[in-house]
Length: 405
Image (tube, rainbow, N blue to C red):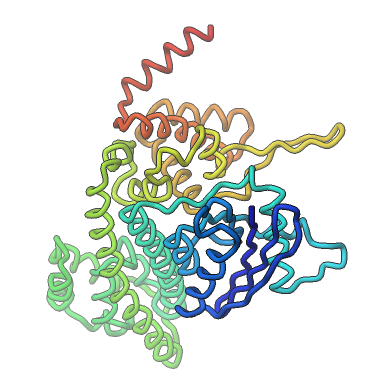
């Protein structure tokens, strides 16, 4: 058996190989280029009898995605991702750290802990694409949030009345209005008809009535900034609005493509049936959960991956339970958002949440506990390829309670 530790970086990768006895056999550094990755694959497959028996090689690396991982998986190399903190525990007391040392420590980790590591199995192409799209959209949504926060602060500095003119700052109507009337003075100088025309062009469903409402609000007593502040901040406002005007349609386009791909998957009926999962959460749950039925040995595996199951800590007379830090953050976020949304529709979910709050749990702890219960339900549905049915679930819950009694 051969154990190859790979310390990856943006521009190069270090590899150290040890044998079953723990003896250092060879090492290599390759650049992060097409030629470098091809050289790395040839190097790994050239170890002993690995070309004929690929299961005799285990590659241990501190990531589970990227072009390096894709290249190794396509070549049929067994890849075992580990948490970077795992390697830190093997570092010597002096704390020496180089790329070559890290690669060696990764190889040692593979040799000693391989039975506890999970071999990386690639997602199906459809799941992989939906996962990339949802994660990229989340990054765009975070950018949108930052821009909206900046826009809010900017308007409060010179045009505070504009913040409350419409329901949301990041809706098309608001952005078009701000571009047409970038200052309080411009808004107050406009006639009701002008405001109505702008709102109508922006697609507002009740442009005329809304125009009268906006005109009246603008002519209420207002805080007025100095001329120099108004000139400077209105320029920043237009820059922020311009960025949001470009970003919002892109986020909507992501929704459309994610929804299209989601419906192509056979498991979409399972996740679409979840209460209030809607168009955003259902695809994220499917993408992060995956479709490989052999990936999770039991429901506890995915509860740990999602970070919903608590972690006990005890030493002597001291003991506590804390939340799991090492987990899939995107899956955890999607499950906890879904769990909270489910309380708006499922009476049992709301009752469970309140029961946890009555026990002294914080909001986040109660939601996480509820998410842990939902993982059990989703896991059963996913294994059976079945849609969620509240009546069936409640009947099973009552039957279980009767048997327990």
